[in-house]
Length: 209
Image (cartoon, rainbow, N blue to C red; front, side):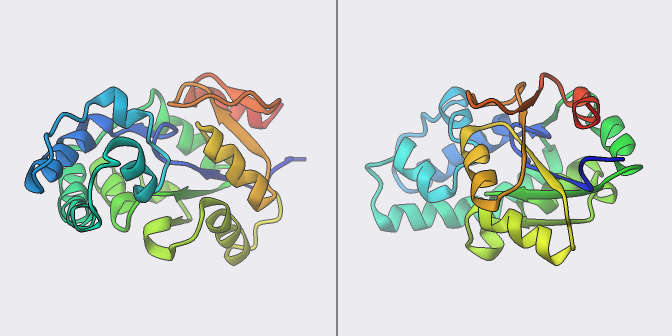
């Protein structure tokens, strides 16, 4: 008998690495408001999984509220278009593993991204067919934990598990009261004694342990 009836995935650092594409748009946005466009991959990768307001506080704390709004508007209008065309870097065996998981589990996406980001991911890589539903902070304004719970409740999930790559993801599962599977190949670190997969292809094996 299966322990879980569904798998809810984080996006950045779990399914793909889009930092190389996103940093291009962020630097364009910074330049458009008169801030030197020096944001790099390493800086932005440490922010993946955070809400945009938290990213502002980390990488451009000097930006005024007016500048922040302009950057947010620029990224909203340009980032999804760029990602839909150029995509990101999928982790090894993502599609093959999703296809295998789909045979036994319902599959979902919950991210702290902006509205349109997940649709850009779908369009770039053709993976929408594997997911039953999704939610994001940009659409609801809610925390990741609340969005996990929202997806679970509206889809009637009894035993979901969330797969993410950062400590913020782990905290969200505590808030949502669902188990956590750490994507150890992603961006972050989680020290708590949780389930862990060292590659995307290993996730199915870990779920069935």
